Amino acid sequence: MNGFIKSIPEGVKLVAVSKTHSSEVILQAYNKGLRIFGENKPQELVKKYSELPKDIEWHFIGHLQTNKIKYIAPFVNFIHSVDSPKLLAAINKEAAKQNRIIKCLLQLHIAMEETKFGFTINELQEYLSTKEFLKYPFVKIVGLMGIATFTDNVSQIRSEFHALRKTFYTLKETVFAGDLDFCELSIGMSNDYKIAISEGSTIIRIGSLIFGERNYSK
Image 1 (tube, rainbow, N blue to C red):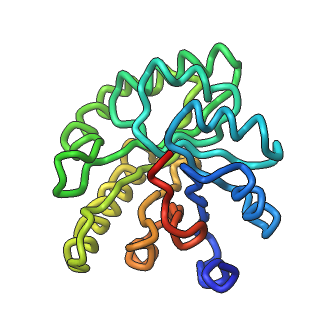
Image 2: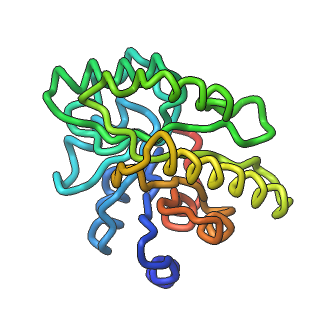
């Protein structure tokens, strides 16, 4: 694992995707120096938060239901998967109850699979043009997130990442002009992180390269 970590360029954050792995396994990774972990189930995340060191930075990376936000709002640092105006409003509501600001990434649907979540580019541009998000003082939009098609076609993956990067920089120069916090592009997982980094990723989400293959029995 150490060799893999050393290969990550400076300025690229590594989120260790620890979903389905036990707190004991996460603690082993923590003891090797990892501090950012990603989960996709609120109840599982709450349990691990209670069991593990409090200097861990927790990222929620899965599809999030509005009625589950309350469980993670007291402590989660990042929510990668904001895929609708309704969800952003609900996060703000729960964050307000905790009197804390939660960093959020807007998820774009860039893959060919219908099962993936996220705004289309047109939907995102239309939503941001309303400036509605400025009404929410307890969320901070800091960038974009996307998941590429699960394929061996490198050209397709690169094209999808490139399109997201283009949208990111367009928004950075227009809607978020002058906002230094809008700086994160979360693309890239174990099978495509090298392509993502070459396309400007600032956050990569890595599971199997750190923890081994996922335990689907849980």
